[in-house]
Length: 357
Image (cartoon, rainbow, N blue to C red; front, side):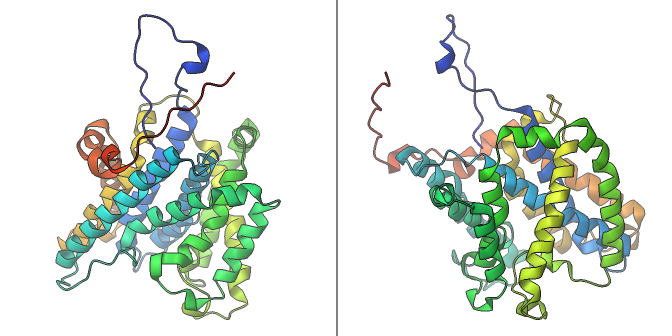
């Protein structure tokens, strides 16, 4: 997620040496997905007593993280475990994980009134699970690139995970395994696949599909646990028969993919006012959780009006505004040392690569 900077030079570089421009479509998609993540977290305390909010929440949770993970997988296609990429994996995922896992532990000691909550790097707290998952997924990328049918194999792994409550909470492995198919799907995609979902016919269908999905979510809310879309528990832990785990994995995967396709169809492909913010989505993701956690402690959800339509709209606007601000260049410059540190002193200098002829 490093921003690529183009420095002006008096002489034009050869085409092979120019830095590749960022694709506005993917930056737009990442920004809109992270806004939905923040909005979903803001809606969570408003679900009680509101079937409509619960339906919106379920709809968003059905596709916002899958969309983010598919795009992450797509941009992990070139990961080859080379020294440089391993170094970026450590500095871009492991270091932020340690920093924010510790920070969230101390923060929630205060907000949750649990002063003895231990700092445990084996038990990801709140949002930090995604850093662990992305680390594991990227490390296994070379393996998935060698598998003949990677997506069905990844789906089989996810289905088996739902049958295995003994996996436990260490490193949030249930989520790592159950979300794995979306990452592997991203690895398998090519630019032409994204062009397919951006066709005019798909864009015209996206709105009606979302409307039908919202109606289905409204019907499902009192009949099914939305925890199936969290992908963090086995079927037994959700109080369901074991056979339902693999079935729900396939159902959730199909529903999520349809909604991800509709979401991507509606993402603008041109540069917009928020395109540049797509380079800072990791900052928005990791930082907005402090406000979400603090909002409950500070009693922001206490007034009765907050649980009405005006309160839902206000919570949506605040969440979108805050996460937008957290993706801006000033925030990224201020916190780059903990979110995207260089740490060159900690690694051996990479030997120069021989010139290709």
